[in-house]
Image 1 (tube, rainbow, N blue to C red):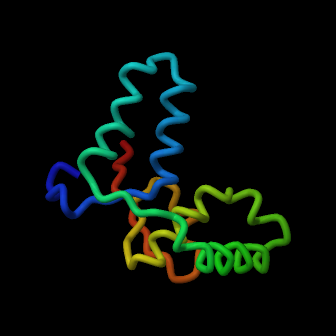
Image 2 (cartoon, rainbow, N blue to C red):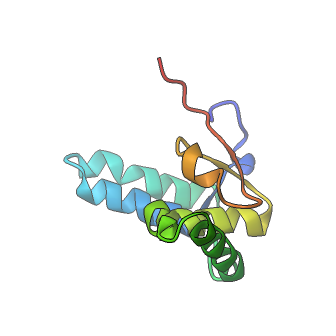
Length: 114
């Protein structure tokens, strides 16, 4: 991410919600709460109220793969995928397994594991 301009980075409102939950659930709230605050101040945050049709399409597609697969993937991930699909963005995630199954959602993994 350090190689990108701040205007090239964006996030879904759902991402802020998940990061905020993570901070509240962590043992180091003060350190972790800075992440969603920094995102809110520094990058474009995409609203989810315009992505509900894409969300429905993704959820139905996942249910066709397996009846309860939409529950395994999780609604927040589907909303993030729907946001990316609606706005023509790429999801950067370490969870390629789930996002790659969402029709039309582009995703990349930037995490290097040793």
